[in-house]
Image (spheres, rainbow, N blue to C red):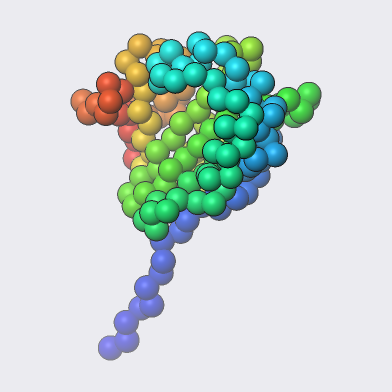
Length: 175
């Protein structure tokens, strides 16, 4: 009796540039720090997560660390800038942390560009890329009062669970 060769699980390409109707999503890198610092320079963006807007130098260092990858071999990071195709402006980012069994998603859109559906468009594009690459479970952690992020999660097909982490509700879906 011959055994079938083991097929490794698919893994989405976390270095691919993604595209949606209005956005290009290049993998984020230190070269995006200046424009991203300007786009995200609003303390209101931290109302639910804490902290303060990062400087361009802080973002440059953070993006270099992200690009070097997770120190945990069981975890992989994907981070994409949101670039408006028409103007070329950077307006936010999406990210995915892949662990065995799930991808944890996050999205941020600068205050000046909120209310236009860009977070939903970018998160939907990211989720489609991840599921095409074999991801079957998506998770997001959202503050209970952050109704805009909850609306994005709901549009993606995620549902709130009874689980909380650091005061945030775990939203989840299996595809």
